[in-house]
Length: 376
Ligand SMILES: [Zn+2]
Image 1 (cartoon, helix red, strand yellow):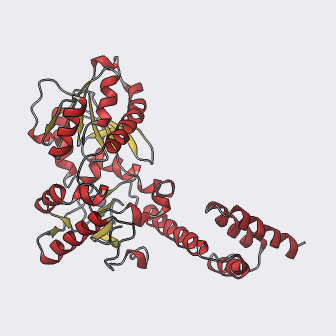
Image 2: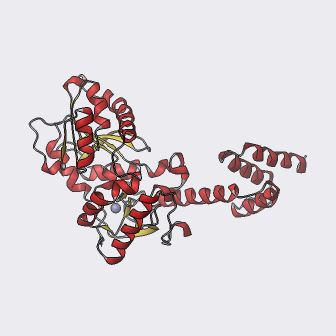
Image 3: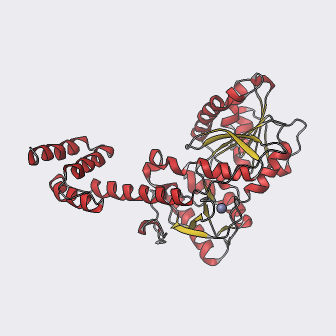
């Protein structure tokens, strides 16, 4: 097992378009990493405590230093060694929003996106409610300006949000009148236990998910719900243009599949009620005396999956550069690479399918005509 492909070796070059502010932030982070202002630490796997990992990437989509590995004993894809808490604290205060959003200020657009996510989340989880939404107290951790809980509030829930980014909290409080306070779950004293705690695109940023989940156990109402959304590694073909490198961003310390997220939650006393590979999942405390579920090691299947995704990405990227006149030869090479007998109609058919997947239906048709002429 090695780095997925040469695109993942460290060459410092960004893989995505960046505006001036983003490029400036990248240079600033590169300098801090080089000078040792941003420090990295190796940690055991948070699911199975293993210290045996296989490397798959050295940099993220911005070309930042970003070692990504797979745990050999459970298959969790993670950043390791990763930045220390102190380094991440500074990164979130100084560079994070500017690097990711290319703008220093919260925008109406980011609130609208959160609100849309809140609507989907509500309809994903509300059928698990055991009483009307009016009876529900919903707490969101990492709420930004509160777009997600705004939708829950409109459905009748009592809502509260916490986050570390003061700028965004002020925006949500002043513009939408939401109850948003700075801090983490560990800092929080509540006079009512939340019936639902939401982590929407937050868990992949948390350095010590075990400690965080212990806090959830302390706060959550008995039989309460825990909703977790994270970007799903197995969903990469439907997002990020099927490009896993695009999914890698230095703020993410974990890169989950539904299975690896479930492994993590089971290891910390929760059981899954529902979930998909997007990933959108809902958990509840497993309860004392519950049978502990067996951990499923995803190492082999996730490695094979990521290598397949990379092959397909490279194939499509190569094809998109190609002139139609070169297709017959490309189809020949394709058939050899895929170990389908050269000049076999099946090989050409697969090649045509690949063209169709990248939206080149006319070219696919030309290949198919070629097949029918040659093999008439
Ligand atoms: Zn592990």
